[in-house]
Amino acid sequence: MNRALSKVNYRIHTDAVKENLIPPELTPEQIAYTYASEADLLNVALLGQTAKQWKNNNPGKKGNVRDDANLNQLLVLANMESYNAILIEQGKPQSERLILLRNLAIRQMDTLASINLSAVSTLPGGDM
Image (cartoon, rainbow, N blue to C red; front, side, top):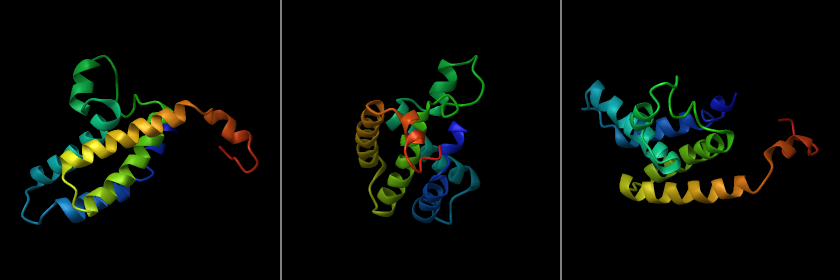
């Protein structure tokens, strides 16, 4: 269930990549690399490492870096996907987006750490 949360804005993010970063002349391999590069941009901004680095550092674990993320990280990741889509559409270079995304991740992780998400379901209308 937690992993599914990170997919909330996945389509928005991949559409922005497709429409703004993938020219028609790219090969399928280059297209795959572009998508992976953007996914790793988010991984580095939030988790401090690429998917390959995580895999190398965790050879005994199944899944991938995002499967190992906690609920707060997955919530922030969903927000970052949406924000990165906006930044891509604005034409921001990847180096600038990394800084902006890292700042967003830090702010949001700090905020989430200060609240008790389990209490949200006890609020009126909180159907978590």
